[in-house]
Length: 126
Picture: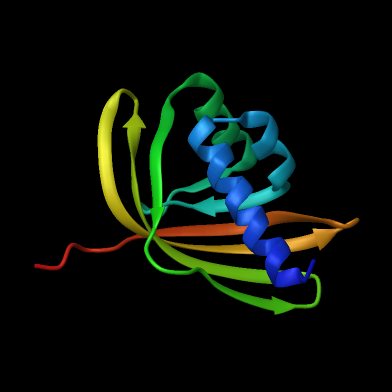
């Protein structure tokens, strides 16, 4: 499998893990030192993300990509940029929005893992 196909597959597995709140799968996909900056500018760690899924604080109900993800490769590092419509519950409050995600994947010991991620809200166009 080509590296770009591996990243596309890893993105698909990540999406499925988020939808299922599968903390075990997320634990494998996220590097221990991952830093995720959310749409409010908060920096979250791997343990923050896993705890939100395990506790039920965050429940992702749908992740619908708008178009294909842009994937770029540099040896054992890849970047992904994608815009999605995202819906779910946070602390039992429903949310929906359009978000642009950027992720940096790094391959170590033959496995791709997310090392950096960022999310920005995409303003509604009228």
